Amino acid sequence: MEACGLHCTKIKNISVKIENQVILKDVSFDVHCGELTMIIGKNGAGKTTLLKALLNEIEHTGKVEFFDMKENKSKKIKIGYVPQHLNIERNMPTSVYDMFASYISDKPVFLRKNKELYAKIKENLKIFGADKLIDNRVGNLSGGELQRILLSIATYPIPNLLILDEPVSGVDRNGTRDFYEILSKLKNQYDMSIILVSHDLELVQKFADKVILLDKKVKKQGTAKEVFESREFKESFGSI
Image 1 (tube, rainbow, N blue to C red):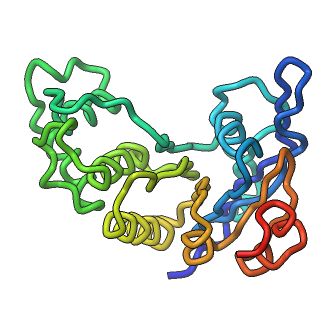
Image 2: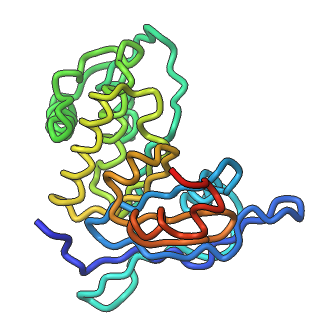
């Protein structure tokens, strides 16, 4: 199934200045529904800062706009987020159900399992092939399993935009393959727009629909081929 083409997230003139130091300057690009946009750049280029600005976690100028082309108007955007690292102690007693329920329910979840909520969470985990993990302790999960759980939480309810920061860092090859298969499913079945920061240029070449080369501002954007063959890319990374 192709992207519907009727929704677009517009990143408009995002700038961040910290103590008179310019971290980002007028960063602008569009992300269409059903599209995986991967952001690359050398260390210190402002990649994580950009994500924090999009999530309104730091002061910035500019805005994020979700535009419905079918209705020809802007709407409030729903954003899901999976961080690069989650500080979880090994063998912590919290179960996958407990963690998931604490994010989506305003009722205490550690006293007694809510059967209706349990069934709802299990159904959502099933989308990611993680329903059998619902009673597992979070601290005992592998890196790939944890990413499936975090993806499931970030996409409940289905957001307009999913933001991922180095999501397969520390995940093995099989886990990485499974992860990108899930992203493909989210793009195709739910018309989800996805922004993903990656340092792995091989994965970017293989999976990106669109690439943004960042160095405080957008230096180049386009397909992986267009960006990787550009002068701006060679100035940042040399030839690969």
